[in-house]
Length: 429
Image (spheres, rainbow, N blue to C red):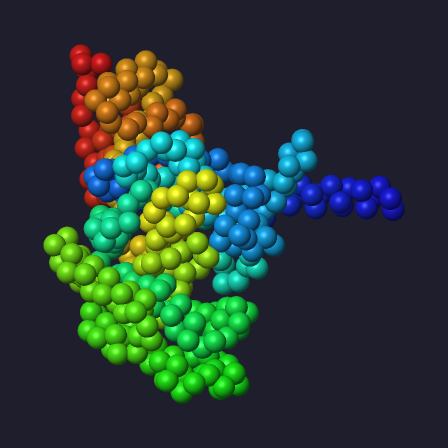
């Protein structure tokens, strides 16, 4: 009985090792290749705007992501200890890591720094609807600039980047923290109630907002403003409506800032993909000023999140304004797939050789590679026929298949069209 239980336990463990934990997954072959192509195109766009690469550690000291910094709650962090007993955490967000690095690396810099990155983030949230706990993010941070041109550059870069990977139907929604916070202040409610209202607004539960305001006896003018809030989503015209309910000078300045941004969007030619959402509030506590998210169909969440965080770097000892965004690559890939947008990977050739044509195959592969062409060299397996290798080439994303025959001929097959021809190479091998 004991032996049986021991064997059963070992088998269960072996089976478990074959699978990934909940919320993470393997990506390989064509899917992985397409993801890399998309990342490369987006990365290239950031480079075109003058952004330079930075890499930060996958895990940091816990304090880099503590609640006071403005990231996610502690219970959603993956935490562990090093040998000295220090609490470490896998990064849930790359922006605080870059802020920490920039505060030291750019300590004496007084001109703007443009940084870009790609890396994985980890959030230990409750999984639902297949939501991943590990995501790849690609983003940019403009550190040391607080002008309106910097805000517009960020949004233009998002639009140009998404268009560069073939996405056409998407919208970047822009809000302003000062506007929504001005309304919150007018309620006179405590921080806990305000946080509850923000959550309800983010979930589009405006009936819940009305209920809290009624129970708290908030004055009618403020309740009317919150009642109009769901309508303040759309083109530049909604800014006029927002201006009418702006409760103070801070809110009016926020509206003016968004108007000025829209004028500059037209110079970049991105205005068709820009809209406004005055009900938007930041996911992270460090956001201030403008905030934005990009949406498209085929995915249930935003594909881009960003905003201004002028006080974040103060947490690491350097006072400087900053703005940035992150493209959630996995959400973007889901959208591209469901919208059936083609992502072309690098063309490759599969060369199948026999025992007798080994030297020929190696020389041919070296010649192709010297011309920067991708070649997969495969030795013939007895019992396999031409159809087997066609299927194998297609699976491995090869566009052409070359069979090196013992009689010094090459069978050349176009995988896309299935066109086939034989070439006599006697005397040229």
